[in-house]
Length: 93
View (cartoon, rainbow, N blue to C red):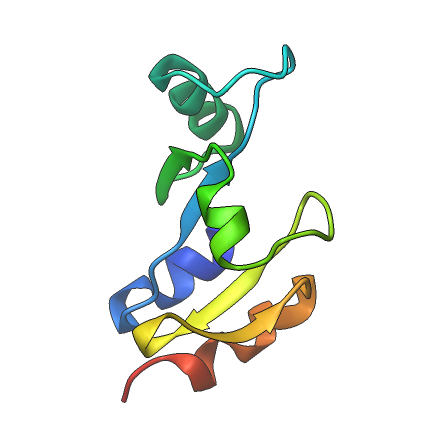
């Protein structure tokens, strides 16, 4: 996802990495999130989720998962890691 972010961020792509729990099955603290971003070299936003996002977008297919949203948070693709190829057509003109 980092490569896609670097390629398309100037075209309006926003990526939010969502970290659901630590290895101790706890909601991640800010230090956990920063460590995750640092470990994987992520420069896009990273946040914790207590299941609100999972519930909103009906994520029930495991980790990792990718949900591609278009303008207005319309779901373009869900549970499809190959959805990265759909990013260019989902971006605003």
